[in-house]
Image 1 (tube, rainbow, N blue to C red):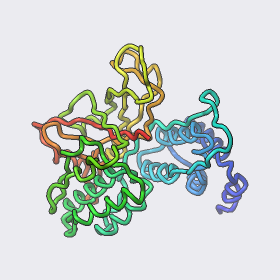
Image 2 (tube, rainbow, N blue to C red):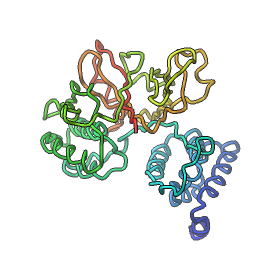
Image 3 (cartoon, rainbow, N blue to C red):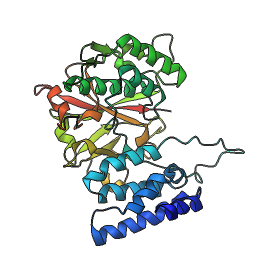
Length: 355
């Protein structure tokens, strides 16, 4: 019976962090004694608690919980963990503080070091119109490029699934919907560098992102484009092992810097060998992680402001890294790799929100 567990949830109320702290401690101890397994009671409490309240009140504890789950659970539970994280990471609108703002010395800024890895559980059974409706209201999709990537993933997967005939993208309808969303959701335009970028939709041809870049009469984009320092022949292989991606980037709020090396940051790939789709990217924030590296890190840089994608260096195609290692409905893995070419080089780039 779940009656006692429901009572625990009810008694905790908004103090969800108390439940999370207990579960995290218990699960850590169980891992030492029993190995990778999650008691049914723990899973029920996590599924039915409002973890977003814990995320708001104690971000460090929230991150600790998911670090323990990611490191300790067997691979078969990773999709559940991803869904739980997405559900609990929905944005909470903060109340506007009354009175004078806190000083920078007294204000505590929460940090999430994981870069979102989108669309592993995108419902490919949606029609194109249903997909557009989902994009319009999704809390996962927060900018134009993410929306285009969702359509790209849907189009490619349905094209490769020979039992599905309807995979064509109505590019006119897509353009109209995205233009509406710029106004409705306050999305920023893309940087000018996207004026020569495009994606290929099967059955519909190339779709240019130039129409979503600023013109002379538009406000400037609030995004900054950050390019990786190295090029790669096989991006998928890079994400299948623990690797480091280095980026040069001086945050706009950093006026002067006398530290050795370039301002920048490192993203570390955290793979799961038995489930290629479940790789994650983590922002390195500790000083020790930058020893003997060509870049140094400034605290102003935030992982939650990053959207990572892949770009072919010899031409203008955009490849969503969300699909790297994606497992389609037929159980095939690494579908994205055959869409790249051995003679081409690929760069990891980041669309960074400067708001």
